[in-house]
Image (tube, rainbow, N blue to C red; front, side, top):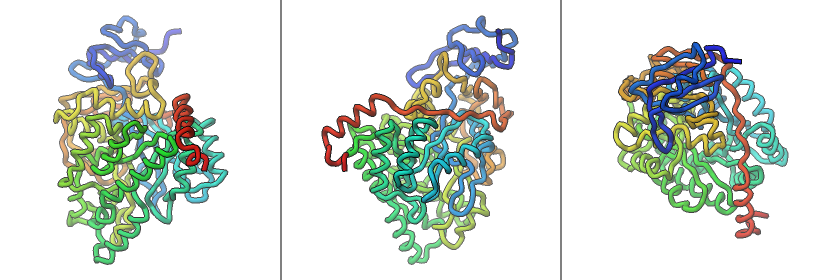
Length: 487
């Protein structure tokens, strides 16, 4: 039976960009999947198929943001964007899939937290998945990790090395959880900041009489991040498990990843850390400075941190880009007016990520279009085991696509963004290279400024456990260090 016209989209005349090459090709989408890619597939299109003219444009796989926090309860409040408004904003920027986080409270059953987050996410406008945080350890947590991997399609677990007296993991928890992840074919991920040092430095900075947002980066200097990154990488090395370091922000942490030759260590970079420096914390307006408070903080331009991150992406030693989208309004940020340590941590960016990185990367010659595709989509799909369903423009893949106008321009502003947040960290930045259309599940959901997102259209995407390569790694680790692994 032929599909109805609404189930078919034909994209004609564009240049398809893969992570390894470009080709002039048309793309036919039928029933939510890519049915054909080639120089002329118009003859295969069903009668009445919607046609998009991509002349002069690129056709890219839909963006994957592997690090977002929608509807997150955090630091005594809840983020402004829920799973609908946040994913809708993502669609407007060319991001068709997110991987968010389930974060159990200490002692909260892991499966209970997971079911709660799954319920919140049912309103998503785009496809989504979850990393699940390990915030405490017990035999029940160990068992729940097995259930999540084997039944729920979770293949990554988050570990906060920061946030003392809240959700911080100690080394014992890291070791237990990393070992369990390896057994299951899942990948540990870490927020690398030494929580003990941060806690100490926050008190020391406050004793100096610094209570405003300018104290935030002082309490979280680069070496605090570098120490934690090195420690997590060392633990992973001893146990023989791959590891994914989220929001790498400084040259020292990037260098730790680069040094781990022969070890499976993967690094993620946020769009904000590539383009914004720590001068924002010294803005005389409290609301503006506080709006930029996130962890790790934006780094000094003089330290070569941004250059190190760009070079890491260029060389392949850093692998993905994300946003850590976590929006709080001015009223919420004002909770820390008299104590920077109480400012809710988080900024937005899910809508701006791809255009900001294209403008800062491709337009400057730092990245090729194929490298851009790799770091905004394909690498995340591969690392979290959903490739080639996602991150790929090819027959059988999900019809998640972006028509990218390299000459189109846009000025970022909180006044025009689709996020519910009241601040934009890229405010006033004009970029060249923007999405003209976004296709999600074979449907046009954004067209030249017209956002057509619908709550509940997004699907939960299961991510299979990793296979024989993990077993081989584990066996080799046991051969090399049986005492350490068995302890």
